Length: 175
Image 1: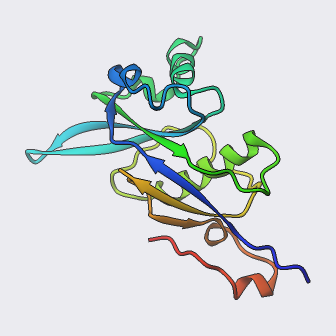
Image 2 (image 1 turned 90 degrees about the vertical axis):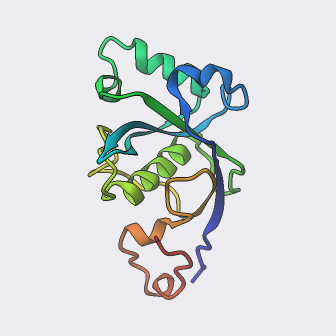
């Protein structure tokens, strides 16, 4: 039997940036990767942040945001109340096993969504990957920077592993 080793993907998350200031963040405008949109609100006199959308882009963040805002039917997060912030997730490496960028980004997006969807400050309006999703790759995802997601996400933790040998070799755990 051939061991299907997990490869690690490193994602560096930016500080939250007010959505209207995103164009000033030239480090991220043309990047492909992930993003998390949130709103801020007051609760018992304390400012809190609610995560409302997780997305991926292959075209660059700024192009994707323009698509969200200018679509015939705007994305659901556009109408959520409150000032919106975005965190950019820059993918620092692409594992050698990746042969399809779209599937790679969808896999990462899915596991970010699955890792945070049940948190108390999450109210995702994503139409896809919350309940139904397809897994294209197995990874260990290591999140760094100003992250709001678990530091380590092992994709095998979120679905049943059929192969009994692989069950003994799960490396990461959700926190």
